[in-house]
Length: 428
Ligand SMILES: Cc1cc2nc3c(=O)[nH]c(=O)nc-3n(C[C@H](O)[C@H](O)[C@H](O)COP(=O)(O)OP(=O)(O)OC[C@H]3O[C@@H](n4cnc5c(N)ncnc54)[C@H](O)[C@@H]3O)c2cc1C
Image (cartoon, rainbow, N blue to C red; front, side, top):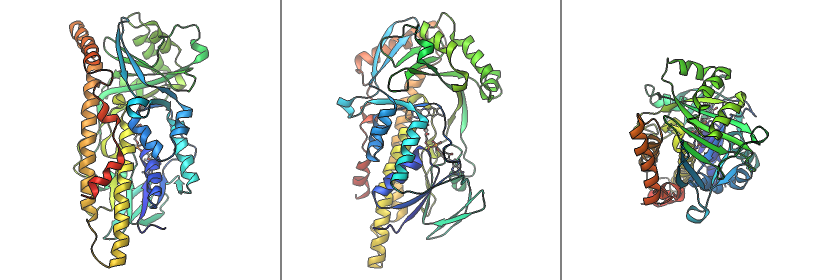
């Protein structure tokens, strides 16, 4: 059964690949256009919570991603002085049907792209979208850097934080740096053999100013990754060092910060033995609120980081991109069905495209904003207390939260989300 609606997806990152696979399940034809070349993969690791894994299961890549990553449920929390504050359930087969998984970003993306190949969904690499040149009642025209053009019924921007598709609708909107730089790095098993690691990893250590997360990222748990943050406003020496492509100076800065006895031994060891070529530094970008994630005609839409980039401290950025993609695929299925009915009956579709997109966008905006509030609240608790007393209060707050609200910390509504519930909303 062929689809009436033809979709051009800009960007083969997490949102774009999951969108193409979800549309295929609804018999909607799409083509993906990616600016990078085939095989060009980003570094670093990513944590996938149950709501992200549920979507990956729906598109058929969960088993593959699970086999490549480190599977866990509890995330331990420690003070830097060694007090165990408790364990947070970052995933749970029993409560959410899924654990949490930390995996190399490149492995997760490779699984998705392999699935697209299996499903015969075309991915055009080296296609950097420059601009949208025309948007009519029926079509949208897109031009790429190589001067080729594509005309299609719907264009969906999955092109990340510096989205060209978003720029077409909102030329004045851009993300801003919030003065924090995130840090990721990896050390390998053989470098760490002589160390006594806390018996249960992953673990987050709440320090005097920063937090330091220690999370393995391969199935055997021998590839130990860490995540931390550093205050580095634009123009500061720390920012200049962090943004240099050569990470040798940054590795030295990291050692100065974390190889001191105020940190437990495993933190010192990781900071000391991190492989500089695995170091990644990334400014935290915050997107201002965007009223609608689509053009008035509904033929140009954007999702994922293009719509709502958030700091990675809550571990929900990719999950939100996956959820946007799967829920939007239900909307496009409706639009496709309506297009067919329109052809068959020569009139009357149940809801206009803009009405359907409005329902979807309002629903997604509300959820993304709740998730952002929840994760930034916990992010604030875990970072930058100004003094000793505040630090003690913070540790007590974390301990009390885990003891009173339980190990879920009230995050059930985040992890139990079902994208297919979108159908109920659309048929109202
Ligand atoms: C270091 C780091 C750690 C993170 N950790 C986590 C985590 O643990 N858990 C979590 O859930 N989230 C995490 N996130 C957030 C998560 O990575 C993002 O939210 C997610 O990747 C968003 O997916 P996306 O598809 O919208 O954008 P992206 O993944 O950025 O994909 C955009 C794609 O579009 C392509 N593109 C860009 N411009 C164009 C153009 N003009 N034409 C064609 N193609 C284009 C890009 O090459 C890219 O492939 C982290 C982010 C960072 C930076």
